[in-house]
Image (cartoon, rainbow, N blue to C red; front, side, top):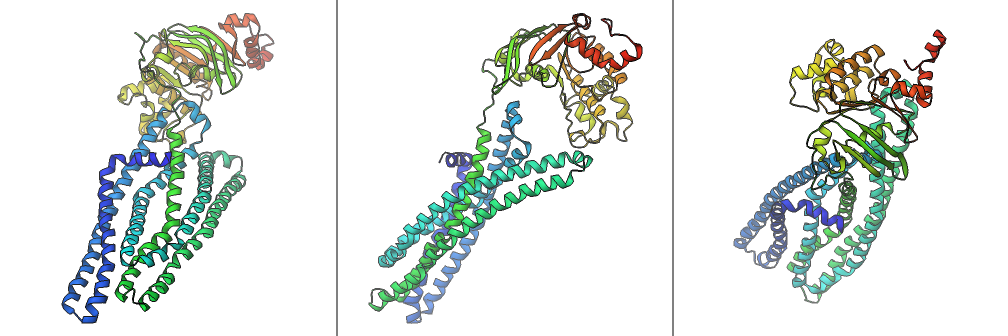
Length: 585
């Protein structure tokens, strides 16, 4: 019922259009109710007396009713189709906006293929309900009730005879709904699984081909596809169990009506014209009975789709901006971690992290994979909320700050470079869509991207493939660096962002970044010692905690974890020179 109420709420902005459509359908239903009465008059009054003067007007009236039904049906269908498209537009737009507000945790747990299945197939199920289901329910209900009322006035005996099967039919429909609803839920879930596998497989087709795993991937797809087939067939079997019974119960109404009507005529309790009229109303009663299974199927399908969509809509944004959120008086780039703890669910990722990055300093973060390096930098932009302690940017806890200004002053170069299927020019100025060509080219120059961009046939207008396909790893990373530089951030986060760039190019990028970002705070997450050795402070992470901190020379002098990292990286050089790497690097 809650889902049904919310579906009604989606249609509320268009209530007058829906009311107009239902009014038009009411006219259609009224015309159906009148037609059997005209037929009765023709049989009882016109034919016995061969009254041609009355025959033509009555037949003309029947034709007028048919024409009126056609016009009203056309206008009603057009109106509801427009309403359904508008409701779907509103729902899709609202969901997409909501998706933008959902935290990283949501996308950590939900797959893109599943989300796409909800945003396409499930929304279409709701549209079908509004475009056709609403009017079908309304039409069949009023046809059934109206025909019963007219039939009662014509012959209450026949009305009672026809209603004998109604309780059995209602019980059958209820049982059908109880069994078909779980079947539709399973179908929707498996459809999402299949969409996810298809999306991932197509996106990773180069990897599949590189490892010659096409047969395996096809086998997995075929397995999921066959499971979906079985679920659809199961729903079909449920359908086949109930629909013939409903057809049988509704079909029995005709012989029951004819037998009862004939008996009444034999005893002069009814005339033939009334029996003809009754026959017209019997169709209006039995047709809804026949359509009951289709209606239950359609409504249940739509409600199942709505449940999945409303699940996303109800997934609250864990990262919410406070009503009284503030901004620092001035963004300088000072970052303070004060006894910060962070956990994914029950798994602790960061423990008791404390350090201060002064404006203009470079902070390097090193450590083994899974040590919490990337998570630490994401807390600054409040993409996750701390479990304990606080993160302050320019003296204000990030939980008390306005999100948009906070994030606009932090330039991220993520570990996994993502580029949009657009031109290099638009990708670089993604964070500053108003930037002119000169600023874009300057940012590309800082990132050492100018050389490969100029060598392309269309230069900056070259359209990259999905997720940056068509560019090398180093080219994608340099494009991402240019994108971050262009927004002129107060804080720059470079998360292993030069791992695919050769050391010579990396050195040039570092030198140009020093000039461009002078006075700005920089966080560097890297594995190369050459990337971090000049940092003002190096944090060595281990098991979610800061195991060591200091400058390059200070950490080498400690001969701890960092010292061992240096020795491991320079082992080949050390073997050649026959010496140990010292505090001078």
